[in-house]
Length: 289
Image (cartoon, rainbow, N blue to C red; front, side, top):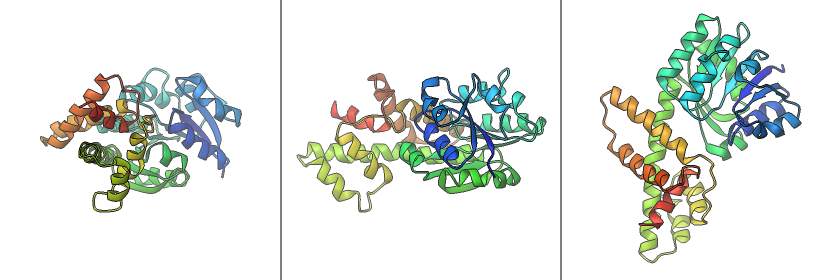
């Protein structure tokens, strides 16, 4: 049955995700900080709103796909935000990679108003969003998860409820730790190959099918080798995720030296002026070494 869905955040990934919901026949209410990024959805029939709260007030389900925890906090619990403006009984789904602590706070605020809330960050980047192959990691109540599953099925392939509010964000932190440290691995491997006088393209094609293989080596390394640093996932966002993960690890008294090393390298990428590039810009840093 068609639903009324508010989609807040129509950037690199959000626009594709919202488009899948629209193509499935759901009525979309959209808001984005930069209106131009929602132009295609509006042209296809979505209704534009000037604020997240205004869009939420028209919807059965509210989905957010934002950049930073501060954006999430403002959108949900700021004045006139989603929690205050949503319809009674609405389901709120934050698909931003954000803080587990904030996810629990939003869930509590939603519950106090008789709303359902899930934290459901995703992995798969721009390609996963375009092809509806995202991995969706969910925290929240089972009843809310069951209600959301038909929507998640339009966006992703692997969908899992990991536990109560905040569990989805913790799972995403585990994912991002593996991603960030793995980026260092393939960048150093291909930098070594280049310095040894080998053709990095041929090395990438050779080792990506063996034990060294990874999604990033297969999908991001060719972009980097071609000098394509366009964002599928921004440097500024992987830095944000690493900060969240390191803060959470410190609270648990867990040391993550590999992640700390990756963050130091990405700090150097950002300092080089490449914060708006895709994460494969780490290879660009090694070209200067």
